[in-house]
Length: 75
Image (tube, rainbow, N blue to C red; front, top):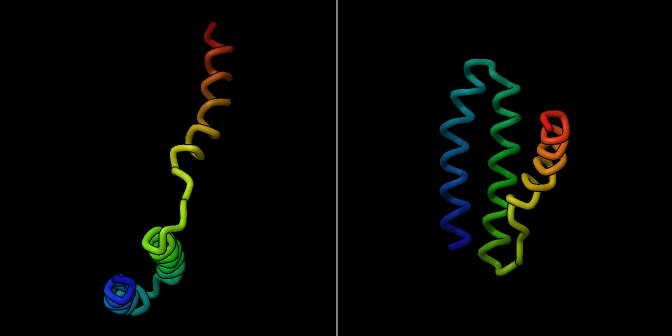
């Protein structure tokens, strides 16, 4: 299964990055490569059985103080 994910990521990156490089969109290429790399690492870790924290924890960590601030202003 690891091999399948790596092959799909490689094929996707070759097709997409060739188009981006041709059109001179270097920033988009860098951002896309970063997201693909992060996603690939997280996918492999998840398949290896590593316990990963929920992304909701980060959203809650950021949103709670903002919600409390807005609530304090409006009440």
